[in-house]
Length: 363
Image 1 (cartoon, rainbow, N blue to C red):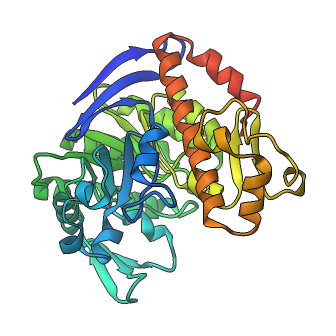
Image 2: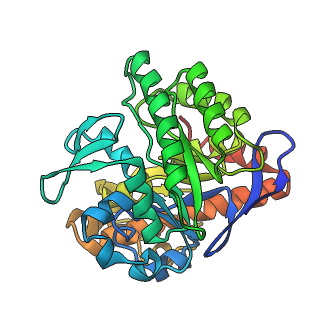
């Protein structure tokens, strides 16, 4: 299922292969977010062309609409024959418009579609994902807001561990892998406690949750430094919600294998693009007469066919095609960056590559 193929000699970065029911993926990998069964503005064929081998969808949102009976097998429904991770949807508890309450039983949400309250339990989260037949299912966890009192994080760890056992006991799809999610906030002792319990229960992989939710970068990195040695070396480590170039380099160096984030696609729709010389906002007036590509060193469809002036114009006019072009560029940039990272680990040149980007993308 998971095999470490190469390690960087001067960091904890590792090049590995994760085998799922829909093929093997090389890690470190970045997954575009397909919340409702699609990566916004981009088709499955375009995703493949820009180098994506896995996406992540929100199983709870799909359960609410259009429903499991409509979706059936998620791969067939969205026309994606590569790896799909599904999240339980518990992360939505950080959204005050959706979160109602949490209890030992589960999390109560207000449906964004009907306004009705819906109770999401660990068992229901697993049933939904089993029926969607994704390749990797995630347990329901309790993810408190950053800045919560330590007593709240203590409760979160206890609840997450209890829910993990309930999730594992109800899991029934032999085609899927099941990942737990470690909580503990920025408290080293709680990270350790949660990790030990989840490792004792035994899962196919481990998500690192409760980070990248507003805490200082130094706190996030320190928590990862504490977390990684507590997780099995022979299992994949998945840092949820991280996708900026700087964070990717720093977290790969610490031994993280899998990432996802809405930032690259959301930023693209708001005109912010990544390049080999930094990121910038295409809506700035200076780009309206710029007849060069977004990045002359980029091989994506957008940069091979269109200018900054054209994409800037489309974005200023809120044209969907402009959002598509910016999204294609950002996703290609990150997929190409991850490819370079994997190659650098294999060649034992990762720190050199990280140093090259450090002056461009910094905290």
